[in-house]
Length: 140
Image (cartoon, rainbow, N blue to C red):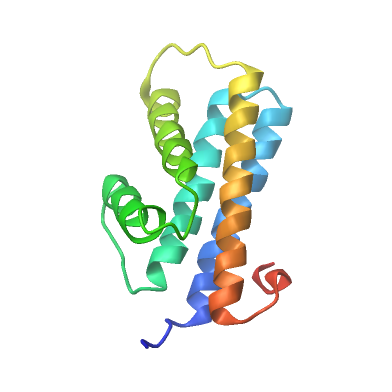
């Protein structure tokens, strides 16, 4: 069995994810729906990067991170298959929200993205707690 990477670095990545999720909620509550979606996406980007890092996997592009997460964790049934659709949706919407001039994003869509991100983060934190053998509160 391989040795897990330093838990301190993984924890920093998780804290970054948590910060982005908090920003997503603040933006959602303030009717900044595009920014909420963008922050929801980055929250999951950082948490799945943390999960990948436990296998010493790091990548230079978002597509590589998502592809590797799918290969290593979703297609191997470590995480539910529907995470793939949620992550891809968040990625597409984040690109649209960040780069398109016009957007028709409504509360329901931004709230759904926030809820998906929250669920993915929760499951990833549980997974990381299990492999590092720490209580979930450790990541806070």
